[in-house]
Length: 343
Image 1 (tube, rainbow, N blue to C red):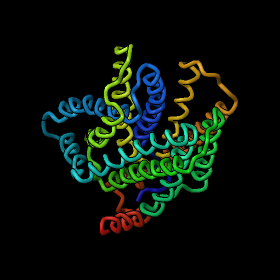
Image 2 (image 1 turned 135 degrees about the vertical axis):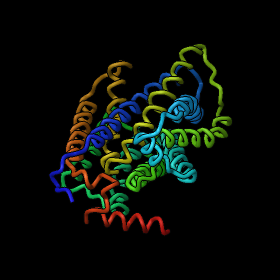
Image 3 (image 1 turned 45 degrees about the vertical axis):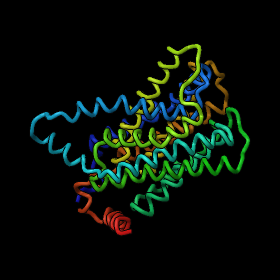
């Protein structure tokens, strides 16, 4: 068994980079949505549908190109091993994706953007840390717990300090449901990644946005599917951006990174999203940089940086699915996985 001083593998650093890029891309979605609301009468459910449908349209040709035969060899064998996710598993991930997206928009409608964001993103890391500890035996440690606490404090200061909001119980309930869906999706990606049955991230993303589009279509039709606008070119450009960057690109990177990094670490790294949104609001939309926004940003980035540094120092054998049976640190997690499969 490798020692605790084993350096991180290149794959781990790549996964952390993927998560940082995904969180940054998600942070641009809010600004794009705000511009869409200003330029058209598109509602949140219709926007979510077009985001998923557009992402599917972008990803399907990419998937077709990726699946063309490229010859035999180790690379082909690796792709075959990674593509073992069942249809039921992919649909399950897609349903969780749809749940947390839809419940979040419902929370925003009921209790406002600030409170919905704090409750959803704030409770997500806590639920994920508890789930990862119970089902996978993943421990944050004292430093990780402090980092999570700092991240949650930074999130509260960043969002509530920049505008506040009215707390409504129904909206909080929707936000908690959204956090539960997001947490379950993250834990699921991590569990499947450790078992080596997570499949290709690109395939998972295609199924997720496809299931999301199918589930959201009836609600989008009721809300109003087609936008009415005096600026059709601008609306089409913004919809194309939403489908490409914060959806197709970001979720493909997210599913790739979430399979290789501790679940609680993933949830905290993804808190980069509100930091990116705040930066865009100040630099692009002309909003004023307030003290709470600056303080919250510093707290969040410090916590994210600390967890990235801690993850990069973790021994490779704990993360590598091919060697996870070789050491006692991972056997409790395997027992928990077996219990989950037996249910």
